[in-house]
Amino acid sequence: MLERVTHTSEPSSGAHSESESAPERFDPATMRGELIEAEHLARYHLAAASACGCRILDAGSGWGYGSNILADAGAESVIGIDLAESVVEAAGPLARENVSFCVGDVAELPFEDDSFDLVVCFEVIEHIERREEALAEFSRVLAPDGMLYMSSPNRETYGERNPHHVFEYTPDEFQEFLSKRFEHVRLMAQQTWLTSLISTPETFERAGEADLDALRMIKTVGRPLSEQTYMVALAGQRPLPAEALQLGVLTSNTEQLRWLELWEQQDAYLQSLQASESRDLWDVVVQTNLRLGEHQKELIAAERREFELREEILELREAMWTLVPLPAGKSLVRRIKMNRTMRKLFGRQPL
Image 1 (cartoon, rainbow, N blue to C red):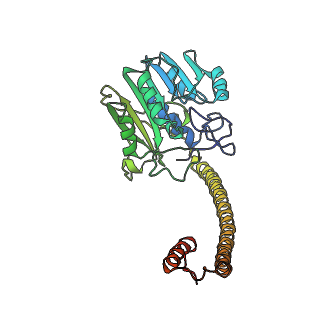
Image 2 (tube, rainbow, N blue to C red; image 1 turned 30 degrees about the vertical axis):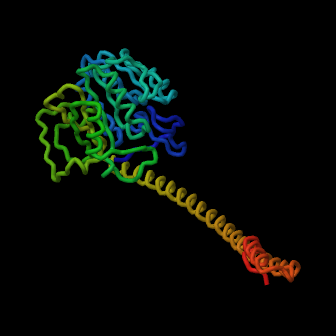
Image 3 (cartoon, rainbow, N blue to C red; image 1 turned 135 degrees about the vertical axis):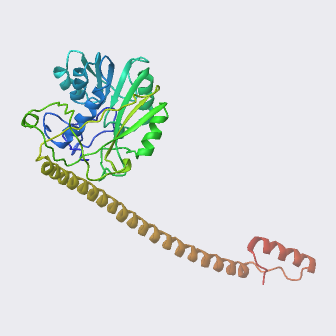
């Protein structure tokens, strides 16, 4: 659930600009053995099961660790694309021989139609303003029988508001979003569980991949998809493989304490951000009320001036009747015409 923040000044893979105070990007060099590493590696190892012999696009490749996983799984070639130029440059020297990286926006891919057999886009779509364009681009560059792997946090359970996320999907929304461009969509769930594992000493001593064919999993509680932290989707224009790989990535048994520390750090940052936004909003309210008070004073002064002007008009009318009396000794008809004229001009009959 926790997306640890690291410091970089550039946004990732077509995302909006990241806050310099707490940008977000997984860094395998500094986060090894942490829960967030297990979450990210699990997604790429899931896609690696479909990588053999494929031309692969890693959309939002970051430091390139996932691209190398796909290459090690037998990919024909892997191209990683990311918007952060400095990160792309840093990833290059660590790349496998059949892996290359380029700077670009996932909403405007610089590749021909049908260029890839597999596109992976993990923890990127929630950062992007132009999500519809990105999905259309993934569909365009995929071969007719190609597959898309995509993940996203579940808005219903993800937790505190993440300032780096533009939009998070619910499971139903994610299914609907992918179905706009792909005939076949399958949603899977990703969740972090506390696990007690019994195995051989060799299993515990060895790091890396281990296929435990005799492993039996027992869950003490069950949760529906709507209550899982992440969603991982497979999508394509052709029917998807009948059986989907299920896997887990184990991390340090002390990671839970570290995870809680990081959660508290991020929670403190989010609270400070909310407090700052509240202060800014309060300042706006105060300034608005001050301006409103000034306008009210101006309105009262204008109303007072209007009353004074009305009084002056009445005084001028009374003075006019005194200065301009009706001619005496005129005929009745002329006096009536004069009265009508005066009423039109001054709104009252002469005295």
